Length: 114
Length: 111
Image (cartoon, rainbow over all chains, first blue to last red; front, side, top):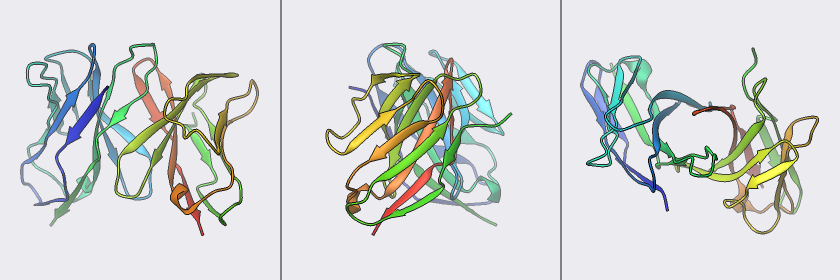
């Protein structure tokens, strides 16, 4: 079955530091890959996505590249801000039956200190 | 243009009571997904519904849980005879092509 393994947290960084959150996956077929962000008390918001190998998703200074050879989709940001403090979830959708259900990693809590 | 609407945002139930969680998808979306998030864990898929049809319920517990998405009105996730282990955040999502839009969730507390 499908699975997503995500770097465990919590992660604490200083403002303007470089961020990497690792994510690897196991899936049948050709999944689409996603990063979602969850702010305290809120639902999930799509941060970025990539639908095929070598695609790079980007948004708000965050980037992730779909690496089929290493089955990875690591999230990066060059200079984090306090407002980036949240929980980040890596997810995949294999759409094998026209069903876009998502399989999530366990989440990584990120705290940025001024 | 309203997003996915869930209500109530917070729900407290005593053990043995019933919990009803509602979800209205985004306008024009006819597919609804329910997920459960236990404390400090990721979201786990429960059920996928289209109007008047359950498409995939592979993540639903076999007992006490049911879901529907009628022709008119919101999708309902129903939990009968709640137990403490049902305490969690329940999220609904509706999808368009390759993107899922999530509601703010219902946080169920069983006391």
